[in-house]
Image 1 (cartoon, rainbow, N blue to C red):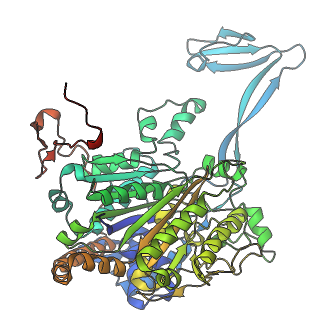
Image 2: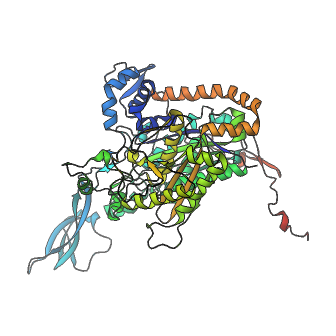
Image 3: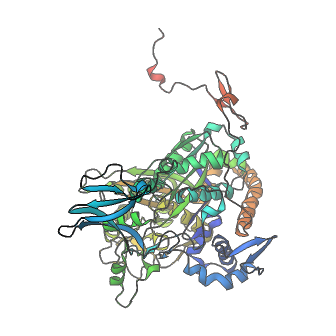
Length: 639
């Protein structure tokens, strides 16, 4: 019998703020929340944004005034709303109006006269051009005479044609929270996001790892783009053209699987399975598929899975812009004829009249247990992974063009939901988190896919949400943003509406769909399953079927019986209290990300190895080396 992958913790950071305890979700629906959870989230965001801090057990603002959560809300709510979610590109990462660049030019000498200039001797090129005549001025400087002409680069600047982005909340800087040592921003966000997820579980990591063998733990994480800012691959490629040196860190820290490596080396100290399965904008789903399959098969019992992406750089913005993929400022203006400036907060309008997606940064991580371990440790149950389906597009006209693979993945995800919760469950108690990029092509193709699957399953009005209207497109992390939002719906009973879209575009297929333009109140038990869709360049289609905590617990009770579930609930009380305490302490600013550099490093000579097992200092359980032959029907004859 397959083991059920249960979601027992989650965390991260995106334009809506901290993900754990549903704060990121709450920010999206904050105007519809009751007073207490709304105030809690304003307080959590104020801490993330550096507006408040802990002072001897009290929350104070910049001038030392002691603030209650109600006072934080009254003082900062408007500022927090304006400086979270999608908004105008801020200048904390780079100056949007003065982006440096070089213009190529040719200098031509006047008739009968050379081009003359002086240069420091150490600045001479290694190979002197043939038309240069070099003479000494002194021991440090030389004079250059160039006949006829020479090619040069002229320093210049430009203004970004795209000035909307889904940036992390204003004032949040992950580099200041630990010894970041020139880490690329995506890895800084990994440290914060994965730490948040692990600590949100409410069970100390040492207890978790003592409950399973070291090789039964897995970490699956990465990024679609890699680390392309200056401290990663971007700097390695730019350095010599900028007259700088390549550092020893830029190449290794730029690799796409480095988020997984950081989690293993500096957060968990894990020696278990590790890796990254990259699938463009479906990367999170690709890793979630491997994680869930590993747990279903019993290969792993604990998996930390997620992705981290920091693509807001001038080069990446320009790359997507020249593809015609981004919402440029002038195109946004053309959508709103009554405005003189772009409506940056409504830059992303999924399934409405739109003009391109809005680039975003995000780091989302989830902790999965197998069902037996979740029961044993009394873990919080936020939902479970029924299955993930991945299919390619087949032959294509172009790499970014749409294809047929997503019809397969959506159809299979709907089928597995129906198999688990029944036909009526699929029709009445499931909904869809669309990829919903806010491009004209996506609104047509994805709506057609979902609409056709709804038709064949007899679904009259399948509810469709699209959280990129709040968060933008975080590329490989985008489905992680969707999953974070899904868990919030099961806690608070609201599906976030597509609030930036005031109508559906005429070419959207919606005969059997219901695109919600406002928050949809379905109740905490109103939806038993969500279908999460992700599409990536190159034909990387992935669709996941996620089950609600209510259905997950029903499945566990069917498997383990009422008595065992009663024991689980008793065990869960202390875990739930610990998770709540972590949230309170983090909101107050009294917690820090996990970062264990050079901590309990184990060398080969420290191991105890026998024929049957391998023991590692610090781990209570040994690794079993008695591996069975998996090909028993193909046994070789003894010599």
